[in-house]
Every structure is written in structure tokens, then in C-alpha cells.
Length: 357
Image (cartoon, rainbow, N blue to C red; front, side, top):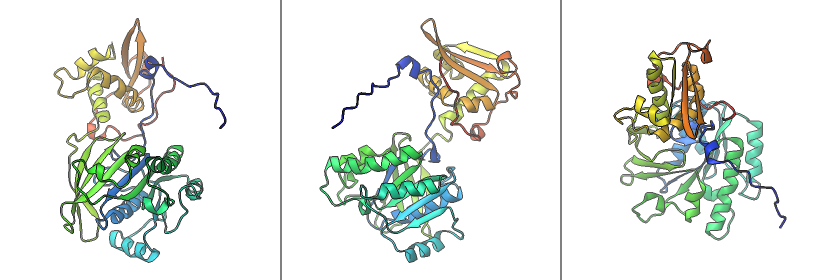
């Protein structure tokens, strides 16, 4: 084995906490980000219907259960279906399937050509945002179900998702036995849950009821439970969502800072002082640690409402500087008006300024 003598590339904590970073790109806002994900459910529960609807909906750029989507090309590897079955199902769930959703019923296995096939498709369709593989087992080579093998197979797919900035969703099965934690029912070793960025389980309230709970957990999303009901066209509709806060914290910080800067041209203070200004009684639950992070992750959105922001260190203390449009530092930027949280993130939030103090 060849030695890798390249030095470790590190970043110190002080620099990291002051540096603007890109937020993950979401294909389905707050639910499905770029990366590798798994959707597991019992046989015949309706996973494939959900996967098909998701592929079509994202390709159209239509909302998924009231959540906005990033429109783009989608690829659905429907490996347990025939072309005729997919056609029949398409006629049930939509009146018009776009040309940007692609279907394939055969492909190679992981490590035996699948990666190259997917990358060739992504190169030919550079606007691809979502790839669905239905099912994971259909693309795995026959070998012992060990932790190492599970992790190796999924890592190969995750590398593609990360390299191309897309979401890859794997359709998988749940074990029949019950468990206190539904994610422990995902078939295979714990490497499967460990290798993915998000896990989703679809469990019916009772067999054949057409009503199920989608439980969601992941690195870039909060834990939540969605109650779904399958309608007469086999589309899973949202009944309820456990996510109680209607707006993202990112939306909220923009609104709070726009309110703070309504009657002033600048603010210079520590994160603690800023947190006390915008959340004096703690109802927003925005701690000093959170306020710095949220500012750094929403610099572009703040600029669009006429607020420039810098987080820096001075005399051993972290300082936050905010300047309103009328100040010299932001002359020429549109004036600030308080922003409605529901519409605060209409633009692209992912671009942030380069460099750090």
C-alpha cells in the first residue's frame, strides 16, 4: 500500500467560528438535502409510489407537502418494476410527466459499473438534483452482510452524492420485528444508518390502512414525524407535521435583525449583547452561540435587505458588527424594512462572502 505523505489540512477553532460557510443545498426544503439518504418501509407499504411521486414532483419544481423544492432533472432507477408498470403509475399520479424525469429498470451493481453509469448520466444532465435507487438490495453484489460490506457499498454512493452536490435516495426494507426505535428496524447492519446523511422510515398505522407515519432523522435536518395518507390516486398526502416552528431559524434571525436595525445605522457588540437585544426574554431561544452562526450562514440574505454583517475578534473577544444601508459602510444598498419571516428567504441564501478576519 502506497503511503500518503500529504500533511493534514487543519483549521483552528477561532478561524472556523468566524468564517462564513455554505449551508447544505436542499432538494426538498428542510427535509431532503444533498447527500445520501435511505427510505425504509415494509414490503408493499407504498415506498415505490412515494419515490415515483417524489421524482416527478421535484422534476416539476412543485412543493412536497408544503415544502419548496429545487427544480432539476431527476433519475429514478425503478429496478423492481417494468416500463409498463411505471407508465401505468405515472398516469395515476400525474396528468403530465416532464421530460426532466428519467426512468431506468436495469443497471449494474455497486463496484461493477453502477457508479460509472450514474456519473455518466450526471455529466450528460448537469442540472440533476435527485437520484432514487429502488431498491438498495437490487444494486448490491452478493456477499456477506457485514458492517464493513454495508459501509463500503453505501460509501461508494455517498461519494457520488457529495462530489456532484445531489441527493441520492435509497429505497430499502424494514425488518418485521418491532423495536422501540423504528430506525433499528432498518434491514442490515448499523453501518447502513451510519453511512447515510438522513434516514426515513414509512410505517403504516395498520396494514392496508393507507395511513402511515414518516419518521425523519438526519445530520442536516431536525427530527420530525409526518403523518401521511394515501389518496385514491396513490399519492401520499400530508395530514400533520410535528415540526412546530413554522419558519426556519434562518428566516427568524433575518426578521429579528431587520427589526433591530430599523432605527439605528449600526450595532457593534458581543454575541451575548446582540442576543440580549433581539431576544431579551429568551422566547426565541437564540443563544449567543446560535446568533453568530446564523449571521454567518445568512450573510447574503441580510445584504438583500440592506444589512452588512461581520463577525470578528478584537482584544480576545468576539464581536458582531451590523451596518444599515444609510451608513457609510453600506451606502448604495436598498433601505431596510422589517422582513416578514414567511418571505425572508425568497432569494439564494447559500452564497456567502469569501474570507475571514
